[in-house]
Length: 198
Image (cartoon, rainbow, N blue to C red; front, side):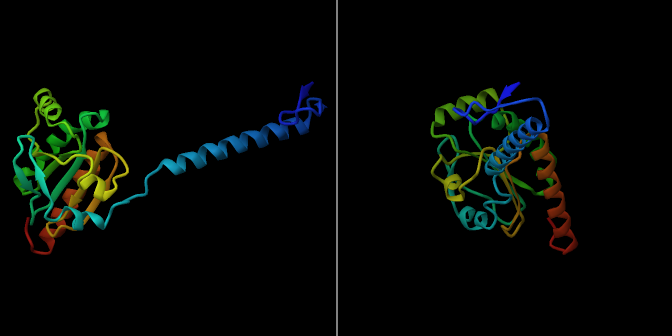
């Protein structure tokens, strides 16, 4: 015999029957419902920043780790990647993105890896340990990343040659690289079919 949960002070005792099984099923369904509801709250909306990128990125000055001022490239398909040295998935993903860069650079695709780190020395030390040929910029946490209200890091945006967003993704790892590559291929193919070239 068992005491019914949630009925403190009543001392109700039930035998092993259908009523006990029904209570367990209801409790299980309630717990599953709460877990699912909580998971849905943590999923960032797809393309949460879509539409903002072009406005925020256009003309925004960035700094290289050496302190030189630079701007994002214009007139080309551009991959803008937000990351940080303290972000474990970002550290693993940067070399993967560098491989994607090597694949597409001869086709005119431009890349910008924007770190939200505040410590330029830490960023430079990281890049000594993880050498990549990606153009690296430092913008801090209150620059473009804050203006775009990014849901997480790493976060990648692919822009077409006119600056329109064709992909915004918070995916990481191999799935992100696949999505980025497919987006680049699709964008280059569309530009070629319209006779705009690359």
